[in-house]
Image 1 (cartoon, rainbow, N blue to C red):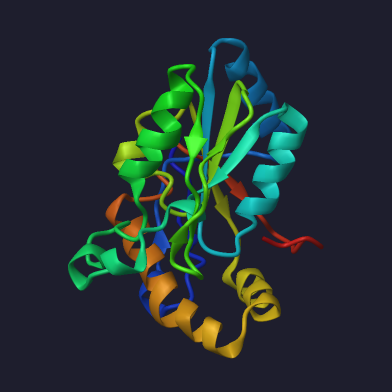
Image 2 (image 1 turned 120 degrees about the horizontal axis):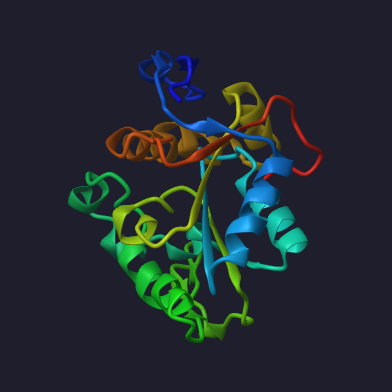
Length: 220
């Protein structure tokens, strides 16, 4: 079913035109029911939760994991190290994420029923943290921008997109970010996200779109 055009939530003027999408918009209860039904039919269920910065992905992922009994891996743990952030790499949509390492360390082992050992990257200190083994689980949620890059999305069983108005997202960012960090979001991180969404036409036909119409007390 093709939806009506909606106004994009991106803050820059180039992204305020309506975009026609063919995506199913569903409520939180429908998400839980649908994921539960899909999980009953597979050994390992991989969920991707995408959307723009400060749209509430982390909060929603944690709630889904708590209710469904799954685990969460943030794509923020798989940004590329500073030394790899060359102009050439960042010019590639989604190039800020090491999707190949995420697929190799997390996605493929999980789908094959093997132990998942992660090496989180601490971008503030530009260092990899010690290897950790995730608890064994049948449901894994990848949350964060770039979780629908080709190296990852082909393994996903359920793909969600969290759609939150820019006014709410901006208010959240202003609460949690410094003035310098906010400039980074506006000048660097948000344009990189926009390029990724545009390049892969997200949200696409195969995603369930969840709309956030009001703020929550625990933004993420």
